[in-house]
Image: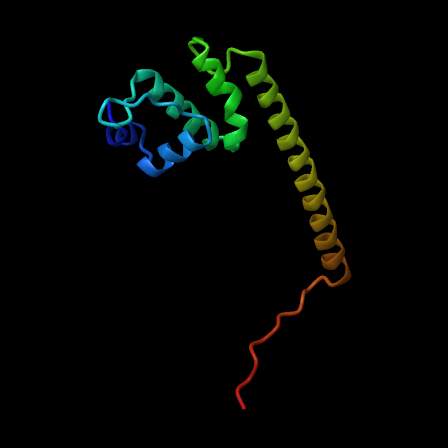
Length: 130
């Protein structure tokens, strides 16, 4: 299939596919007339990249998954390097959730302190026109 059909079937753009190729994530053989020729394996790779990006992984993070598919595995997360990416990203997400939890706890404490100081919070009226 040509690049336009691959873009249509994966729901992305030809520009994105060319970018993936420039980044070394997608390799497409060229026909005699210079057109890129893609097959079902390329479709799987692009879908893998898009799915992983949907979960917040960077293009660089997708490299082990693409390499795993290229090596003949049925799934991009069948290889140890891919599992390491999952583990690293989960640790990053957990750390972010911890930070957000601390921020939430701090805001909740500030709100409770403010309410305790003043049982009937004042209302700021809009500025009167002169």
